Picture 1 (cartoon, rainbow, N blue to C red):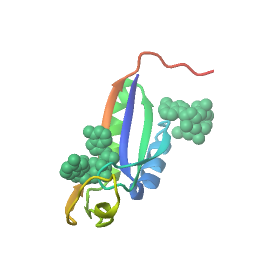
Picture 2: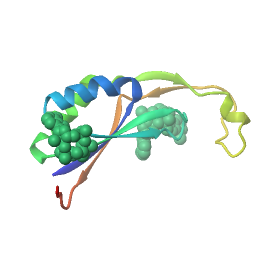
Picture 3: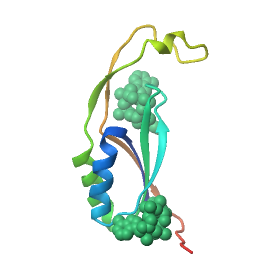
Length: 108
Ligand code: 2BA
Ligand code: 2BA
């Protein structure tokens, strides 16, 4: 078994969740925040049998879009925040996915 940790944009979560659920993948969604843009994104934990990892990745790729976003000027004025001197365009990827080996998986 593998654990996919997939960070996706909130806009893509609902469609992605429906598509994965239809195909009988099991998902846990965590609300997360990107360290750079400091806006919400969604982190999905998806425990998948090894032979279905590629199928799962294909569904993620099909349903998550790259988008250009602008860093906020608010970042500059907040003490302790990362120093971003002017707004800049960044391309936020469709999804960032970590694939981790699962040592054990139990359900009670
Ligand atoms: P359980 O399988 O006991 O799962 C309870 C919760 O544990 C799930 O909540 C999910 O948050 C997490 N979970 C379980 N297996 C997981 C895995 N392989 N990877 C990541 N997280 C996992 P829900 O998603 O709200 O599901 C509630 C119950 O609905 C599930 O109970 C299961 O009986 C059923 N279910 C979930 N997904 C399904 C699907 N795609 N098709 C049919 N039934 C599903
Ligand atoms: P954020 O940290 O809000 O980053 C949003 C986008 O800003 C990134 O898109 C990237 O294009 C850019 N970016 C991030 N950090 C940067 C930096 N230090 N310098 C210059 N540009 C930077 P993605 O790479 O597609 O990442 C989207 C989200 O996925 C990230 O949101 C973060 O929450 C997560 N992520 C990406 N790579 C990660 C990693 N290696 N570890 C943990 N989380 C990661």
